[in-house]
Amino acid sequence: MKLALISARPIIGNKTKNIHTMERYLRKTKADIYVFGEYFLSGDRCKDEFRDLAEPFNGPSIKYLQRIAKTKHCSLVFGMPCKDDKVDGLIYNASVLIHPDGAVDAYKKWFLPNAGPFQEKIFFDQGEELPVFSTSFGTIGLLICYDLYFPELPKALTLQGADLLICISASPSVTRKYFETLLPARALENTVFFAYCNLAGNQEDLVYWGGSQVYDPLGNLLIKAPYFKESIITCDINFKLLESARARRPVLRDIRPEIYQDLYLYSRYHTKNKPKKRKESTQREM
Image (spheres, rainbow, N blue to C red):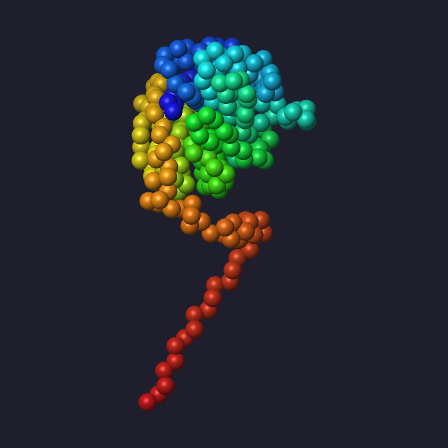
């Protein structure tokens, strides 16, 4: 399977131009899956405008991109603000997967950063589901940016059968070192292919570092895009390598499920086990 990662700069608030940018990159090379960054449809730093830019998954932008996917017989992954399909006024930060037949799947971001320059909790509701998606090549799980900091999410997707995890991102330059520390770890600790696609260039006051990259199931870097420059990189993914990687590093076999119940209790109720008192050794007097 040939994967194409596009590090590019979307225009804030201009979905039409951003779709044209996607089409331009699709013409540059042939691939099975094309991946664009977080918020690529709308641009980042939109603030209250996110609510006006959000669409349902059967909205006009999705329908246009469905036609492109069918024409090129490829899959598309990209970020967008989406509307809740039941409750008016609720929107999510979503990663969308459009299949070659036009079918649409999506993941809604679980972890919304609200510190420093990030204020996602002001605008978005958090996702509640962790789906994986079947393709003709393998099973794909989707993540978005800050989700990377929470190892439970990639683990949950891998345990559901994900062969490839795709994380789209809008990571500014100040966070690059954190992301590049976590990416190989997430691949290795799940023995899964891991692709990361970041924006490049600036969005108002933030500069995004690009640097899209792919790791194999043992955490080895396969390819990396240049920093701070718009680019497209491609990588061939051989899913047959998963079996041998999981034999060499059997982390999925060795999971202890009971720890997750303990983690729930520690996190939900902030309970702590009392440290065990050390028994003092006694010696008989001779």
